[in-house]
Image: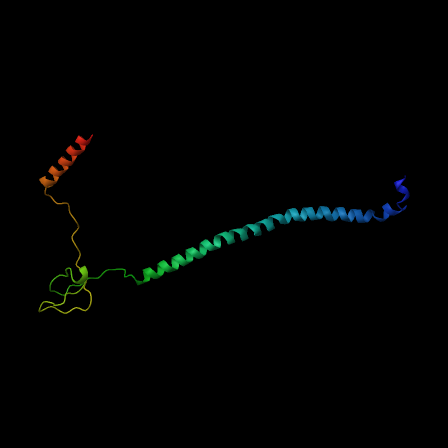
Length: 148
C-alpha cells in the first residue's frame, strides 16, 4: 500500500513554516534554559543555605543575647572597703561573708554581707614530709611486694 496516497499533495508545503517554528522554539528554549540554569541553581543554593544556616544563626543570636545580659550585671572592677573591727570569719552556715551577730564595740555597723579581704596565694610549705607518712608508704610497698 502506498503511504503517499493518504497524504494530501500540498501538506508538506503547508506545515513547512510550522516545523521551522517548532525547531526554532525548541532550540531557543534550550539556549535560554542553559543561560538561566545558573540563576535558578544560584537561587536554589541560596535557599538551601538559608534553610540550613538560619537555625544556627538564631541559636547564635540567642546565645549572644543571653551571655550579654549576664555580663551587663557584672561590675568591671571589684571595690573592697574595710571599716575596722574583726576580719570576717566563718559565720552562720559556714558562709565566710555573713556578718557576725555581735559586732565589737567601736566599729561601724555594716548591713548584710561584708567583703572578705584578699587571701595570700598558697605557698608550698618549707617543712619536710612527716616521717610517719613515709613509714606508712614503705609499709604499703613491702606489702605489695609480698603479694607478688
